[in-house]
Amino acid sequence: MRKIRVLCVGRKQETYLKSGIEIYLKKLQRYCEIEFKTIREAIYSSGTMTQWHAKEWKEIQSQLHNNSFLIVCDEKGSTLSSKAFARKLEDVALQGFSNIDFVIGGAYGLPAEVKSRANLVLSLSPMTFTHQMFRLFLVEQIYRAFTILKGEKYHH
Image (cartoon, rainbow, N blue to C red; front, side, top):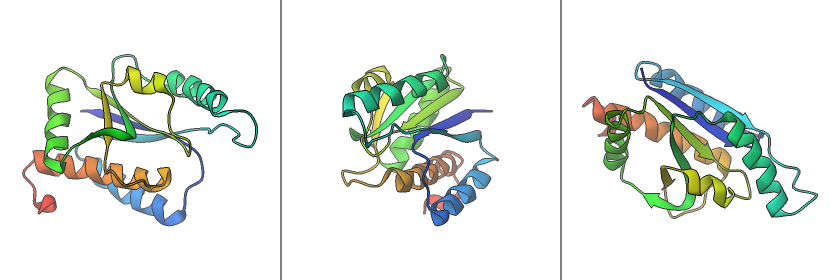
């Protein structure tokens, strides 16, 4: 069974977003093992963005699997349709990756080191979303991708 981890910088999350994410995590259990891991955000009231990114990158690195396909979520990444995203997840499995790590940055994005290490830098939209809302959108798209690959009705 495929294993997916979503590494998210930042702890705050509204209850309605947590509830939405939980709905999709439960639905995804039949397709894959999926977990969300929270990375503590830097203290943005002191230091510089470079220092914040360095702290967050260190924590992200400690959580990444060595043999995972790494997808970094960034507003400047490639956009894919839902069907193309589904095909990408399928291609990743065909390439022999059983683990996929997604990384969602915090309020100040991600350092260049994370993006340069990624196998794919992905944007869900040219619009900007809060990183908390993005979590829900991403997990819904992962669920949608599996239903597309299985030929189920959800996508329609």
